[in-house]
Image 1 (tube, rainbow, N blue to C red):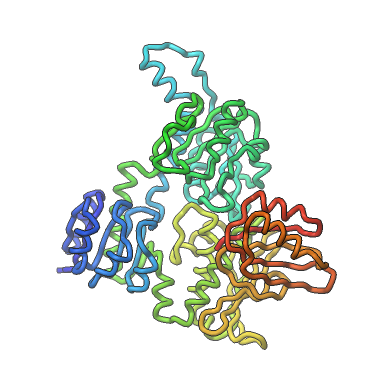
Image 2 (image 1 turned 90 degrees about the vertical axis):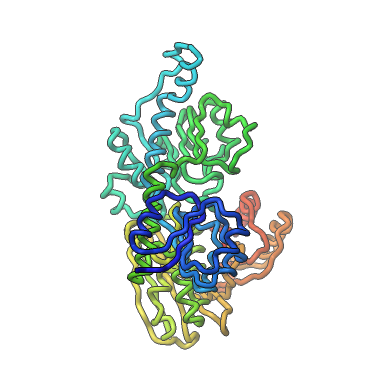
Length: 529
């Protein structure tokens, strides 16, 4: 009889408890526990299962004397202090993919409701009005659906929309043409998608690149009367700009499930506009999704306790690094390189070539590849990315990974080199660790430099001539952004150079535009790590 003790402190489908008890675990189901109650009881438990209500902070973790696993019945782990758990050697796992179908179906529900004015007609009829002409709608058949973000949810939306006779076009810098053609999606750049789509559905994470992706500027590129759906993350749509576009008729209808602030300010016009349909973040709110994640977390926890198999683990790399502390800085380096490239990507990624130089890196090649992919995908997909699923997701998206190992070179004992290839360009990064933990990128493309990959970075190409750094520095000063460090690489005096500046704060779009207008400066990127 397995006497591991598991506490469930949030409201989770009863099948979770039933499954764990059937395997012989001692399960305590106490949803609604206060932090003080959890702290007083948590010491003797081997497993904890939560949803979003319980905040598993450092103080609670410090009281965990026997804890082996913290499980989140859902995708995100924002309510769990993963770093503290990792330092204590506690596994943190979630249930990736548990809400995929529910989120895709909710997108379809909003699409149909928006096109046929169903909520508005329902309200009108219940007010004893018969307004058939007022609520004339549009068919999905023959319309072009533009899907931005082709992760699992985006692909499920595509599959369902095809059954309605829609033409599906998509944008995703990680998705290959071959992978897209297999599922009947034609890939385009964003501007082309905006110009061709009758309906646009968003399925990307919220990041620097995607914040206010739908705005007055981008809507100008769209067809008159375009329809917008957002079931991804609040903040991807500029809500004020969307209302203005609905007022002007540029956008004929919109359906939103997520908001910049939740719960939102209900005085906003977004909740009053007759062409707007809103739901309160219901993407994963189905009986099936909640049952699915409850079953999933129970089976994952059992698989670990009984068979030492790890599924959905978000901190596997950190746990491995704890046992091999010398590799931990290289894990951070690999993840940083992935994050940097994700914010510079311009064309669909086809292949990644990774070279591990040095015996230390040879021993942890798989871990470092997963770290690189985690950094890359976490900036570009809505799924919760971890060290376990990142290689699988990369394969699903048609990205080819080549790994090679080489001996020590003349300059560095251990050097991690990564080449990202697309049909139109390639980017190269190489990095190492000085001392015990000084992480540095020492080469970008053909340029030798020394960059500390942390915080906020400004990268740009420029003509190597006097006054260029001063000109950029002036624009940063005008934006009240302080320079924390600078590295310059050049191939030949007076020719092209690459400059990387560490700054103290995020650089806003208007400041980037001003820097891009400086004569001799181009290819400007703002990167957050």
